[in-house]
Amino acid sequence: MFFIDLNLKIDKSNRNSWAETIDWIFNDNKFENYKWKKKGVNKVARYTNKIKKLDYIKKDNFIIKKANEINTTTAKDLNLYIEMNSGNSIARDLLRHIRNGIAHGNASIRNNYLEIKDYKDDKHTQQTAYIWIPLDYLIKMKDIYINIENQKM
Image: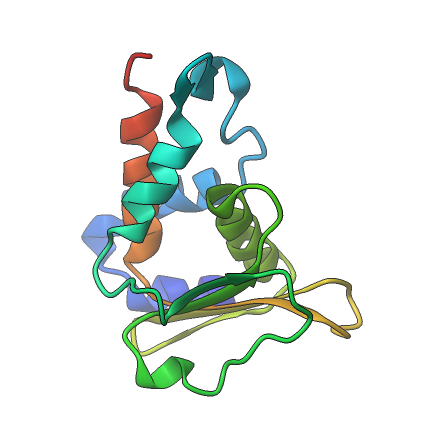
């Protein structure tokens, strides 16, 4: 259903960009060491910092925790809301939650917003992420990623 909704929402002139973005989201080789890691250079942290500077992202609507409960009650009253469990890397975990939500059928599009839920298992016993972002943020996140990946270390 997600891909049908996406096809209906996007501008036809922007389809190539969306195809590239979806390919990027499902690419398991993001943050490859030879492009992203060199002694003294942390491109992943640079990417995380750029993501945090996107419009609407603030401390009260970008919540990172290792708790078992995800609170989504106020999300749709905001322009953006991300609450997720994170282990080592906020950037990696955010993209993993987005990919998992889409891949497991827990993503929907409402009024040009992407709503994603990610769970620890297929039984949905423990929610690990709730993401409510403007639809175009996926393309912005990919563009930031590519820009940083192409920077020389």
